[in-house]
Length: 105
Image (tube, rainbow, N blue to C red):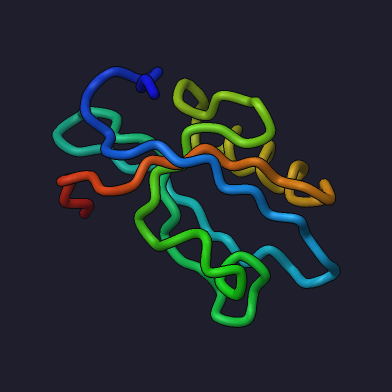
């Protein structure tokens, strides 16, 4: 398991969500620190959203990719746009990094 973006991003996991009719309920945010791009993270999960109910994703998971699309080099606006479109897919394969020592603002 490599890390495509460079640096130590903790353990990489592929989370597979087979969606139902419930809203996904994931809120993303692009974090930077002292001008260094830390990437796109899950800022919040709606309590009654599908993602939170699945128990597979956590706040502060770093989102690396979704359905094969690399998010590590995209702007926050582009990631939000792509993720919104992809969240309509019946199956989401989300590559996340977990277990970092980063302190997010």
